Image (tube, rainbow, N blue to C red; front, side, top):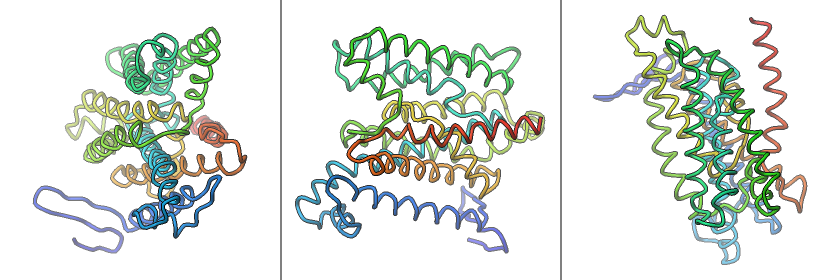
Amino acid sequence: MSHSHRYLTFRNKGFSYLISKKSLIVSLFLLLAVIIVMTLSTGIGSIYIKPAEVIRAVFGFGTDPNTMIVRTLRLPRVIVAVLIGASLGVAGAILQGIVRNPLTSPDTIGTTGGATLGAVSFFFFFSDKISIHWLPVAAIIGAFAATLLVYSLSWKNGITPLRLVLIGTGLTAAMSALSYLMLLSGPIILANQSLTFMTGSIYGVSWKKAVYPLLPWVSLLIPIIFLYARHITIQSLGEDIARSVGSNVGRQRFLLIILSVALSGAAVAFGGAINFIGLMAPHISRKFVGPSFGALIPVSALTGSLLLLLADLAGRFLFKPLDIPAGVFTAAIGAPIFIYVLYRSRNRG
């Protein structure tokens, strides 16, 4: 490891990574904040458990009741919030980089809408025929199908960022209307399940149903995406610059969109349509670490995790004994930020 005034460089035979000291400090601060909020969130509920007892229970040293409450009921929810928030944050960072549009996120290129339509279609057509465990599969299929449709419709001698966002936004509106049509025409019990999914909630998740399938998926995809950080940074500078340094823009953009959809589709599959995390996390992160994706990807992951943890904590704590879906709070915060970014983009234009 070599040191300079502002940067740290990590090298071995096959790998070299340069990070600014500021980015490292921001990352460590966010990691600490995530751990603190995880601990507090795990302790809050109908039975309050002190942070020290939460830590003891996590490692199996607490009392039997506390250990059961923490490890069986609350810890899975907190871990899922971290995984989903990180997934949406990274997916949004990728899309904003390669599309070069600050309004781009999984919500605006059809990914979230497709996953939601896939889930609602499952409730409407198959919930009485096959196991509910197939719901995430339906959501992921919907996410890929919708994004590929947007990509195909946007193709005209290549993909332009503006066309991709406009077609994605239009198709998202159409899929949302279709989802609500099925919701209104189906049985009440299916409407309730669909509405919970469409709002975005991590209520009732468990190790088996959410943590175990989601953890390896996220743990595999985010490091792969991190290895492409340099390519995303180059693409964010524009197609002409990317081509001038030998980058295959079309192929790399398609691959990165697929990785983004795989990440955000899985997040929506297990947490529902939690909007605006993919928009907010990269914007907040960019304020602290700048546009380099070597730092932006891990910081966006941590920021997304922190945002969703806080939204879920607010939903459980502010309106006790009600459990308000986290998606309500992310939408309440994200919508004004979306308007602000839109206003700034218009002024720059």
